[in-house]
Structure formats: C-alpha cells, structure tokens
Image (cartoon, rainbow, N blue to C red; front, top):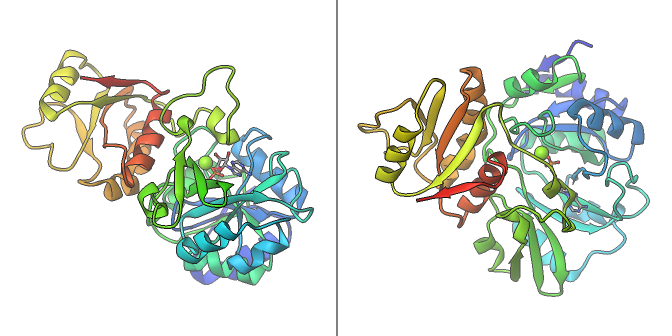
Length: 334
Ligand code: AMP
Ligand code: MG
C-alpha cells in the first residue's frame, strides 16, 4: 500500500478514507494520531495491526463536542461535565463507562472508554465531516516515541496506512492527560499531560496514580492498560539523571564513549564538554521537543543518551513520565 501524504486542502480525501473504514494519520494539538472510525471493528483492527499495539490497550475516542459524549457512554457524572467545561476542547481525556456504540475491540475489552475533544482545527474538521467518532492512538509503532510531525508518521507507518494529513508540528508534543473519575469530587491521573494536576485542582481533588512516576510491581493491576507496556523508547538506551549541572557533567564524563550523547536543558550548553542536544528551557518546551529529540538520536545512531531530568511538577510531570518509561523506570540521583 502506498501511503499518501495529504495537505490540509486535501482533507476531503482523508474524510472519504475514514468513512470507507481506512486508517489515516492526523495532526492533533498533542501528537499525531492514527485515526479510524471508532464504531467500525474492522477499521479499528487495522489501527492495532499498523501499530503492533497489544489488543488490550484501549484507544481514545475523539469527538467534535462534549455534548456528543452521551452517544457513546452509559453514564456521565456531574464532575465530568464540570471538567469538560474547563478543559474541552483540549489535551484532556476522561475515562467514562461506555455503551454498545463503542465496540470492545476499541476499548481493549474494557467496559469504559476514554473520550477526548481535540482542539486542533484539522482534527476537528475531520471528525465533523466524517460524522464518525474517531479512535486515534498516537501514530507511532507501539513502544516507540510518539510522532510530532507528519514526517515522523511517514517514517513509522509508510506502507501500512492509507494516508497522512500534514498539519505541521504538534503544538504540545506529548499525549493528552488521561483521568478516571474516582468519586463526586476526585479524579485520578492515569497519564499526565499538558492539562496539569495543578490546573485540575482548581476544579476538584486529584490523585496521581502511583504508576505515573514509578513502575508497576509484577503482581500489581494497572489502572490503565497502557501503564503495563514499554513505551516512548528510541533504539538508544535512555538514562535519566537527577542532579545539578556540574554533577551531570561529571557523571557523563565518567561514562563517556563512542555514540554516547547528552540531552540537556537550553542554557546548559555553555562550555558543555560532550556531544549533546538541547530540549528547551522550561517544561512546555521540553514537552514540545522531547519525542522529536528521541527520534533524532536514533537518526544519528546514538547508543546511550544521558538526560537532564525536569522536576515532576506542572507540565514537567508529563515530561518526567515519558522519560522514566523510556528509561525503563531507572533514575540515577546524584
Ligand atoms: P494513546 O492511544 O497512544 O494515546 O494511549 C492512550 C492511553 O490511554 C493508553 O495508556 C491507554 O491505556 C489509556 N486509556 C485509553 N482508554 C482507557 C480506558 N478506557 N481506561 C483506562 N485507560 C485508558
Ligand atoms: Mg501512544
């Protein structure tokens, strides 16, 4: 199959492909998604197969407006409406009880479904014009860093899907915040994103699931199936280091060699003595650039990358979560 690279002006082609049960790479404000009709089991199976995604890892369903959520859910708690008022459209997913309009293939066998209302104008128009709920996981090969440009999607999916719509670089650069509703006034963060814990605290209480910053024990049940799987890892070995700049430089120096690199903050590079890339000066920039940099390290055949680690608050929690999973949950604290 030849994968078409479409411009925004060719969106109608993408709409027809979606309506015909095909899979299309689509820009969203978080990362690029692999979109297909969430109510069509065969279309959804094509997503799982293109990604090599485990069948029990559910897909988020994207809708044009939160008022459409009742078509796909059996119950919407009051707190979900309050959160939707504040964070939809945007990089925010709520796990709600599903109804029969969402097949079990889409929900990975669960009786719940993640609902998101994306704000990206291309994604929004695609949902409206196709008149379908759109299942759209990140458009990477399962386990690899998420794509933040149409070229990243082409690299992972060329020949496996019908088309990719090029909408430029993703704005946020990390996937949506995923929450489940714990009770009338509490949510649990299953995956941190650019809607932060601090922002949600303005609406209700927040529990951050333990698996967000530490690995699951071997006998522990995941609150979200995605927590079980290796993710965000480039071919290079990622090593997270929590320390000040001087200790970081010393550590890298003691472990330096061929194909060893550092990923450092903007501002660290003055007199930095080893091969490096930078990934921004604050958490928003780091979120925006992280996956792009991880892919660039593979382009230059890096074997080991020592990473300066942001503090896990605000958007930093999302960056920290992606890094710790890319690093296999090991952090070196100096
Ligand atoms: P991705 O599709 O790559 O953006 O990943 C979606 C993430 O949301 C995965 O970690 C899923 O496990 C999680 N997720 C999606 N739907 C649900 C659900 N119904 N319950 C719990 N987690 C979910
Ligand atoms: Mg993903």
